[in-house]
Length: 426
View 1 (cartoon, rainbow, N blue to C red):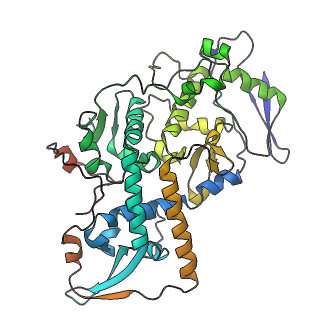
View 2: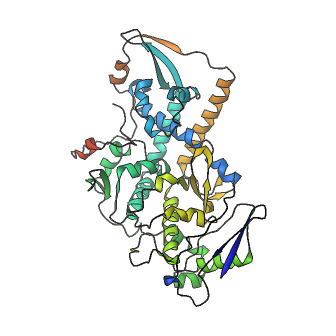
């Protein structure tokens, strides 16, 4: 049976689906050949706009907050460039100077008389960062639960630290979570050396109370019959202008009635070529996005989750094949996947307290960018003739406010060397 998508400007794309009355869905093949036209969603694109710069600025704030006097020379900050996600052709100092409401520039002369730019946090940025630490402390149980559930999604309850690093911003984890958070919860987490010699984080015990997906929690949105047959349906919404013909809507309704497999359940018995398996993949990412505080992440952040989550090849194609559940934004020269149901236009429906902090940082950045373009900020200040190394090696006047009195004797901490390194400067 053939169905058709009507996608903008009258262009029609068709596909054949094997879903029909009386058909054995477990034996049917997934709709791997569906090709849908991408339709721009301006409201969700607006959510993504500026996200790259905001994440980079907040990471720099975390780095500077742990430095002596909250100040570091540019060459020290440049060591962290790989984890900032900035364009390769953008100088780090140029980026930092765009936001004088957050970063104050000064300079020193080293022993050779070389001019060395240094950057420190403004008082306003430092105060907001301390507020962020308070929010993290108040929501610590929630953040730990998110990390536990992420590991419970995996086959062996373990993920490489590099993989978690890619998701830590979206999960709301502190920048230095390995140094300052994991040792506090040594009864829950442990570091393991993986077969490929990388370091992984393992959840030590399973928690049945956490092994309930968000879709299963939203029982009020399901019919009594669907609950009885475990045929839970995903919330669906489409970009304005993304029209669906009645027949295709019929197919979608039938697909929603397929059995739902919990992302926390063993799915090894499912044939990866079937539509039931594809619904399980959609369910895994539906749950994963609900674990993030803004219900979105960059596509590349999940590209290496195939083996840990027991997913088939080309598993991220479900984002294109289910545009009513996921939206792919192409802002900032990358692809960011957004969970549609989480937003009402540009407004996120369930706001995590960290979202408010990030929006205030974004507001500060916009103000600083505008003011600097108007020439309201003068040239940098001169500190004096001293070795900038002393700025880095002096007494740590900052701190992240999450330090634990727990000392870990696990030498795997010191051996962790990631491209997405998260160790704070010392």
